[in-house]
Image (cartoon, rainbow, N blue to C red; front, side, top):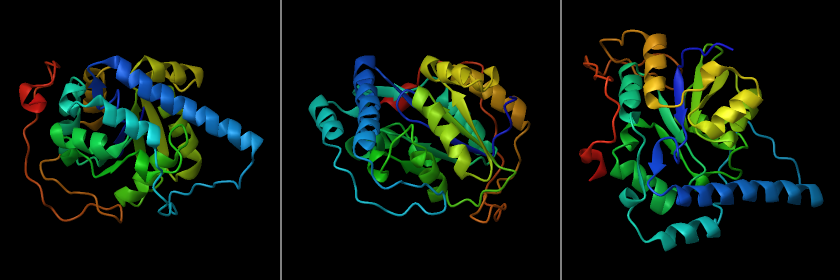
Length: 269
C-alpha cells in the first residue's frame, strides 16, 4: 500500500517523540503497559463485562484512573525529565516542516502526563507544536486499544472527511495495532508509521507495506518533503469545520534538514 500525503499527523511520545537516555527505564514502562493489557484481556475472558463501544464522536469524560504502579515508578526515579529523556534526533525538523504546511499535530501516548509527559513537553518546547496531548490519565483503555487515538482526534476539534489522511507515528507494535483498530471508527484513512524496529515488525506482520517503515526522522522528513511539496507562503489554519480559517500566518523560511544530529543544547538545558 502506497503511503499517502497526510492532512493530520499524530505522534506517540516515549521512544518516538523523545528517547530514553537509559533505555532500561523505557523497557520497564513498556513491559508494565503491555502486561497490564494482557491481564485486562484475561480478566475480561474470565469475568466478561459489558461491551465497550468506541465512537470518535462520543467519547465521554470518565473517572481518572489511579495508575498506582505508573505513578510509583515516576515518583521513585527522583530525576528531572531532562536527565531521563531527550528529543529524538531530527524531530524538530519534521515538526517545523509540518507546521509550515499547516498540518495539525497532536500527541497520543500511553505515558503518564502529570509529573512526566507534561513536563517533557514543556522542558523541550514541544507543546507549542501539538494542538492536543492525550496521556494515560485521559483514557480508559490504552493502546493497542484505539481509544487514545480516537480521543485525540475528537479533542482536536477537526471535522474529519473522506479526504483526510491521518498519520500516526509510533515505535511499538501496539501503536500499529491501535491504528488498525481505529480504522473501523473513522470516516477517513489512518496510516501507521513505524518509527523503530518493534513497530516495523508489526507493519511486516500485518502486510501493510514497506513505505510505512521510516526508521529515522531524516527518513520521515524526506518522505514528507516529497509528498507535501513547497509550503504555502501564507498560513491558513484549519478550523473545526474542516475548512481553512482566517489568514493568521506569515511566510516562513525552511530550515536545512541536511544535518540530523543530536538535539541542540538549547533544548536540553
